[in-house]
Length: 492
Image 1 (cartoon, rainbow, N blue to C red):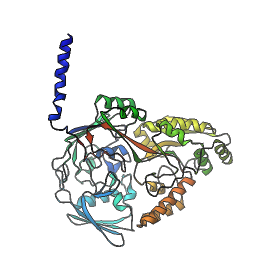
Image 2 (cartoon, rainbow, N blue to C red):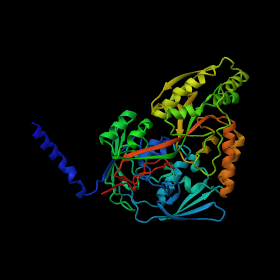
Image 3 (tube, helix red, strand yellow):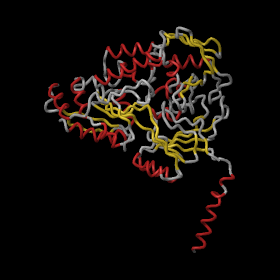
Image 4 (tube, helix red, strand yellow):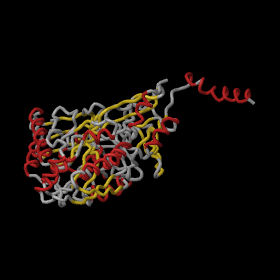
């Protein structure tokens, strides 16, 4: 019997022994923690949607690369007038959508006007706010006139919210997305996965992968087990930082610890008492111990004191604005009229970083007399209740959009923050083209948010990438919400 088993084992191993002579593998299964609510990046704030479709299924006039730089995409080039108010985009030839319809200037006009419309559901409508007019000069040329110079305009057009869609398919993109990217949508199995296949008529360089599957695994233990078993090939952001040493010691895997654009915050509803009281927000900021919260994520986060990425050259270290000080927090609560503290709810979405931080924050606020009830919510509930409805006291979330400090200037944003001083700085920043002055304004905006204690600024979310050691081309950092597969391949 032992001999039979030995022979069976040898036979079973033969395909693997012969593998080096075979063609390189051309499929990839990528693990993700959160499942997208739908697949239209122009109609949701959910990062998970962009992480599946950005640069893979959908493309914009520009795109953001792995280094965070603006690159041409559907626009091969562009001209800008000296005053920075008129952009003329020269579109690529021979581009088609996945359903066979041809891409031209009218699709750009349609996409921009759709996003700018009064009833638009685009989560980043501010990208399009500077636009006064968009015109198709001919099938390959689009003229965009701005109300004022906007220094970040080309970068903003590289967001997932600004991808180009076709009027023939736009209404169905939530369930059956049709773009111009190197991969076409194959199918979605709700609660499990999204499958993409290579688009054979892609205008650019064909991707090495013939098929890609995004597998949704919300449980961190299950995610790690799937990697170890080979059921998935990669997890671009592993939700189990405690297992990093195990994967680093395993030669079958590559581990890359990078950075994201994810400012992780204790968001407070500034429009609701008692969080409308500056002294209460300051007290909460003093009560928070960032180091303890980061330790719960196994020290893979970078402390922040405002809503800004530490890797940006305009970053200002404001972590000392409200140092951890329990007695100072209690004194501020007394001054605010809450000597006995108060009760509040903390709605926590599914990501592990939010749930782990939430439990520690509950304990830290209890030390200053604030009784916190933790309310776990699913992702769809969080989007509906917190992000859209502003029906919350506090929540923990990582805002992963690039350079998104401007969200604090929005009148209807879920923070409920209102500051004429901050709005003025952002208005000047929007019109400023000089990089040095832009950095000065970004620094001033950071200071205002920190001093106003708008939210509890915790840490910059790390990117813990773990994938099969034979896989190349995945991003180490996340300058934009994306799992860009265009350059991913298996080593032969």
